[in-house]
Image (cartoon, protein in one colour):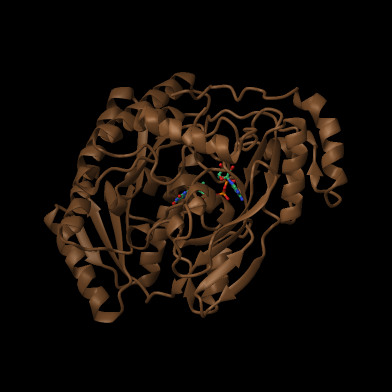
Length: 474
Ligand SMILES: Cc1cc2nc3c(=O)[nH]c(=O)nc-3n(C[C@H](O)[C@H](O)[C@H](O)COP(=O)(O)OP(=O)(O)OC[C@H]3O[C@@H](n4cnc5c(N)ncnc54)[C@H](O)[C@@H]3O)c2cc1C
């Protein structure tokens, strides 16, 4: 893994470029939009990916409208300065990390919900709208925006689109891509284009909108998003199962798939995570189980309850030490809250290197077994949370602060896990994106021909290689 790969300067040093560039940027932007204070700029220079390298931005621009973004891109084109888009900075792959001497464009101030259309079941939003805020706004119309990354209280729709974010309910409802209808995008040429359409169907031309979804800020800066909505689902029925090992829990995940059940969530949380959450929030969670599986069904009434009972049976048949349908909604919600808090809880113990591999469902038990063996072989604490129903596993490699040797072991374990996922027919990233951390993994996963296609698309849409250079592939 090339954790220390430098983000090579693509222009003169930030100190030299900064002043002239900042003046030109400021001339076309609202007062206060350009930030050059070193502390402020430093605070916007990286995301949440531990150990991913980052450069020093020359400036940060807090865009307020599409015209601001166009001005930034055109100014940077003239200066040959890279532009890095930034949402909330919750990314876990280094995608929003500054390139040396770049301008970081923060989209957080573009945070208005522009339209909610119950007839068409769509919403139009600016990119800085926070995921949970969109969900709350559309819920007032009995509508629902399904993609729910565990970062939904903080992450932005622009960032979700740029990473094609997944989440808990994707096992039934799909990922961000399945809900994007239309995008307004500022290209690397400084042009504003509309991609996709508002209609329910439409096949005119290549799917250029689909190319931008998941492109991690390398093909365009998203300045407006039209999303598809659904009616609000029925209240969910929750199933909890305790297991004595991650492998047993993995077998239960496979059993649920084999039974043809499609839950609206199927999450795995192991004892490292539960303990970390307990130590932080004192939630009184069970420490009796090595692993907890949490399932949900949102079919109404008896149908949902029947499906939940079938899941309980799958859990028990796979060796659960305890499995029940929850009758206490507050208790069920606490377990899901613990799942969402697992990552920040572990971060309190030391730097966390987050994996994001995804394997076929039938390989979940084998992949979890390999992760356990890797932890022992490399001498690394590996906690596990997973969108298990998707086969999307998040082994979390926790190291003591400042322990250089532990870090090296964790980096080696990170590579082992990627190699195992590929060997089992999986992918190096299920939802977090390639960013910087998975560039080697992408090269291992894709053929040379397919990588060449990626480079050809990049060269066509961003010929100056202005947008987030060095991310996804070099
Ligand atoms: C606690 C925690 C839980 C998480 N859980 C999940 C999860 O369940 N599922 C999941 O998929 N991810 C998860 N993540 C990862 C992260 O939240 C997602 O990748 C999210 O989509 C990033 O959104 P953001 O607004 O923070 O974007 P940022 O981190 O700011 O940026 C992410 C990428 O998008 C680009 N970008 C941002 N905005 C734009 C824009 N407007 N136009 C073009 N490019 C842009 C950036 O350049 C960068 O490459 C989690 C992260 C944390 C910290």
